[in-house]
Length: 65
Image (cartoon, rainbow, N blue to C red; front, side):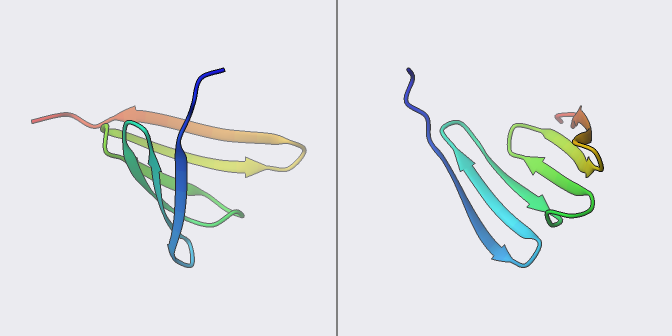
């Protein structure tokens, strides 16, 4: 089994700073309602938990300059 690293810090209510072995990200939004995550790798993700065990997620890559 590979060794993994992941750490998450709550900065403000509804704002989290997430670290893993390769990148970092900021998540805006709480556990209920939509969440928006911006990653250092250039990925923007919007997700939301829906009733009945369903969920919604969409991701896109930001254009590099």
